[in-house]
Structure formats: C-alpha cells, structure tokens
Image 1 (cartoon, rainbow, N blue to C red):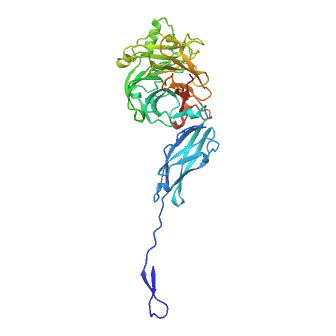
Image 2 (tube, one colour):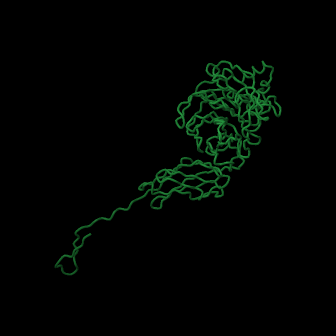
Image 3 (cartoon, rainbow, N blue to C red):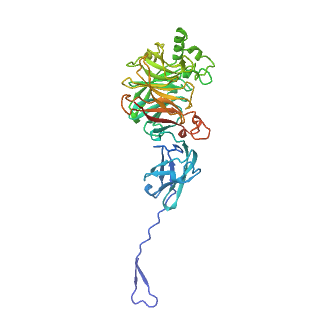
Length: 457
C-alpha cells in the first residue's frame, strides 16, 4: 500500500490511498487419507525378504511427498514395536516392512501425518512365526499352509497345489508373499470338495495332477480324491496362465483291480476298504507322480502307503502306469507295469521329481507323519527298476511343517547343486497359540515354507 499526505490541509492530515494489495488467502488442508494393501501381515523371526504392505496416502491441498508415514503404536512390542517398522518410498504409495522381535501377534497402528498437523491411522494386524534353520534360504508362500505339490513354470516361478482345496497358486520362488495368480478348476472337475492334490509333473505344456486316491482321514471314501487331471500351461513367470484339460476318475479302481488280479501283493483292496485310514503302514495313499525315463506315456505313481511289505523297514512302492497319456486323453482304463520297490531306509515316497537329464530326486518321509516328527531324506535315483537309490541328504526336522514337494531337480552331478523344497505346514502351530495353520482366520497368516538345500556330493 502507498500512502501520501495532502498538501495545504489544515488540522489532521488527510490520507490519500494511492494503491492497496489484498493479503494472500491461507491454504486449507484436508484430512489425510490412508489405505493398506492388506490388513494382515505375517513375518518370521530372522526372516529374509518377508512380505510387505503397500500404504497409499493422500491429502487435499498437499503433495503426497510432503506426507510422512510411521508406526505410532504397537499392542505387543515384544512381538514387534514401532521401531521394528520400516517405511520406504516418497510418493503416494509407500512400502511398509516389519522385522519380527518375538513369536506371536501384535496390532500396529500405522499413521500418516499431513500438512497442517492433521493425521489419520489404520491398524495392521501382524503375526510372527518362529525362527528356522538357515533363514537366508527360506521363503514363505502365503495364502495357504497346506502346500502339497509344486511345478516349475519358468522365469523363477512355480505353481503350487494345496491338499485342502482345489486352488492352484502361482508364486515367485525367490520372494515371500502372496500368490501372483490363482486358479480353481473345481467347476470344470465337477467337484465341490477337495481333490486332495498330492502329486504333479509336467510334460511339455501339459501338467498332470493327481489326488491321493485314498480314503479321507476318517476312512471314508470321497469321490473327488479319486481324480487325476491335466492343465495346459501358456506363458511363463508372472505371465503364466493355466487352462483346464481333462480328468480321469477311476484310477483307484484300476489299481485295486490290478493288485487283486496279481494276488493282492500290495493289499490295495484292504487299504481302500471302508474304515481304513490312508496314513497307515498298510494303507493306500499316492503322493508322487513323475514320468519314467525318456517316456511321455509311462508315469510312476509313488505311494506314501503301503510299504512293501507293509512292516516297519519295508520298501517304498512305485507303480508304473504304462498308458498314462491315454488315460487322460481318452479315458482308457489304466494299464500297469510291475511294481518297483525301493529301499529308502523304511521311509515312503512323499514326492518324486526328475530333470531333463533323467536324474530323479525322491523326497522320502514317513507313511504316518503330517509334520516334522519323523525323519525325512532326499534320495537320488536313475528311474530304472532294480537300480538302488542313493541318499543325498537328511532333511532337518526341528522346524514347523513336513517336507512335501520338490519344485524341480538341478543337475545332480554339479558341485553345489541346490534344490528347493516346500513344506506342508497345515498342522503346524506357527504362532505359538495352539492354532493349526490350516485353521487360522486370515489367509495372510497361513503360509508354507520353501527352503533351498545344497546337496553334498
């Protein structure tokens, strides 16, 4: 403003206002907004690359980069405190990570502070599982605890099956976190209950999946478990897609008829009888599926039960299906070759996988255990009947979950060959509250552990 006195004016001076500029109007800021990509998060003590949560923030009248995000409170700091929360990024979307301090659960208050001192909060419910051996080699596939079979699809990704549902999940093998994509083929299979998927293998663009073929744990026959089906793979890595192929639902009956015609050598009729639980030494339960050396027609079915003979120290059983391709392609009744009996130190087949060079790895475990209460081991085999497998490793059993799946087989002649295995953690008490993982309320807290092992020469 410019002010001048008028000349010759008597008495009080008169003011002439030559110019006046209005003051700038004050900026008004709205209440900040905050959203979490997930309200539940799981981590592990000593975990490497645990899952993160995206935090999206905003405020009217302010640039998102001017906002700050932090953890302002924890309901149980002994599990994870505010100082154990790290937020990275500067834009509208930040990444929040938690480093577990102790076993259990805590609710973390996540706060955004905007301009004008205005704030908003959200609650993140966090669960921390116990430390495991070699945590740098461990990753956690969340969304399900009951991993049962896995197939590599290239680009560092694998499709993992679940024996408690019919959902197939695509995971990044190198990272912990939720599946990138899921498929549920229940409607195409014509089932409403789980197939109890236990084995899988891939030939070209076709993945073969098998149910356990056995009774349920109460000894009841459930038709969906007597299912073998195919999916067709297109793409790889994050671009992987699966399409439903065909199914066959009489393999169990074919196996029983074959064994009966051959003098009930393996007791399949008795093992499938009403009231017979599958996880008995003389039970009936398929968990491995792989093709014979150099073949795209003969598939090996690896049995968790029975042992052959069905006594402690008995041998593991593999039954060849010599027309497996036709069984799925046209519904032809299965034709079988002579049973293959392998000395796995009294253990049974929990998974069976080969590489392009025809080198097999057998994941061996107890016919009984659902967890880590009995030994597990890896055996190398050449797939030839009559040739003995060779133990390559004893697997650790101090951590939660039972070893269940081999993702793929490396070159077993190479020094430092590493193999990735996946656990079924469904019956594990992951968070120390007595709740089995399969019964947890939130999918984000359910998880199977994948671990890399270096095989000794």
